[in-house]
Length: 358
Image (cartoon, rainbow, N blue to C red):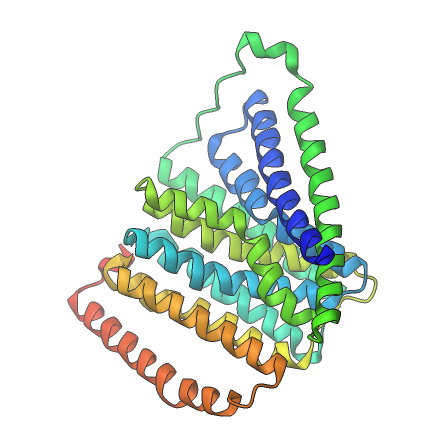
C-alpha cells in the first residue's frame, strides 16, 4: 500500500514538475525574445517528455536498465495507440502533410535505429551519442522547415510587460522548482516501481512498460486530448509524433550516455516490445495518409490494439495458461486482417491521387 501511494505521489510530482518547468522556460524565452516557433519545438517538446526523461535518466543512473528502456518503449506505444486512439474517438484528427512527408518517416527511422542498436543486447554510450546527435539534427530540421513555411524569419515575441520586469527572478525560480520536482518525483517513482515489481513477482520491465510508461505520458495525454476537444486537431497528432521522436533520440540517447555501461536490452524487449513499437510507428503512415486524418474507427482500432498489447504483456509476465491461444488468435487472425484492411484503404487512397503528400 505504501509503495502504491509513493508511486502515485511520484506521478503527481512528475506532472506538476513538467508543468512548472514549461511555464518557467516559456517565460524566460519570452523575456529574451526567442521566437514562438523555437519555443514550441524545444520547450513544449521537452516539457511533455520531461517525466520520461527524468525517470529513464534516474533509472539508468541507478542501474535499473529494464525500467529505463521499458519506460521509453512503453511510452511510445502508449502515445500512438492510446493517446491518438482516445483523441480520435473524441474528434477525428487532421494530419498535416509535413507529418506524412517528414515527421512520421523520421519516427519510423528512429524506431528502426534503436532496434538496430539493441541487436547486440545493449544500447552503448556511443549509440546514445548518435541518438542525441540525431535529436539536435531533428530540431534543426524543424526550425528550418518552420521558417520556410513562414516565408521569412520568425517575428520575435514582444518584450515582457514593464510591470513584470521587476520579477526577473520568477521564471528561473520556476525552472529550478520544476527540475527539483522532476528529480524527486522520478526517484520516488523508480523506487516504488521496483518495490511493487518485487512484491508482485513480476519484472521491472513489465512495470516500466505498463504503469510507469502510462504515468509518465500524462502530459502528452492532457495536451492531445485538450487539443482535440478545442478543435486543434493537428496539434494533437503533432504532439504525439514529436514526443515519440524526442523519447527515442533524446530520452533514450541521454540515458545511455549517463549510464556507465550503457543500457542493457532484455531479450524479451528485443524479440517483442521493440518490434511492437516499430509496428505502431509503421502503422501511422497508412492511417495518416488515408484521408489525411485519423477517423474515429481508426482511433478505436488503436485503442483495441493497446488493450490487446497490454493484455499480452501481463499474461506473459504471469505465465497465464491461455497465452498460447491468445497469441495464436492475434498472430493468425487479428493482425493479418488489420494489415489487409489498411493495405486496401492505402491502395484506394493512392489511386484517388497524391493528396496526402501535398
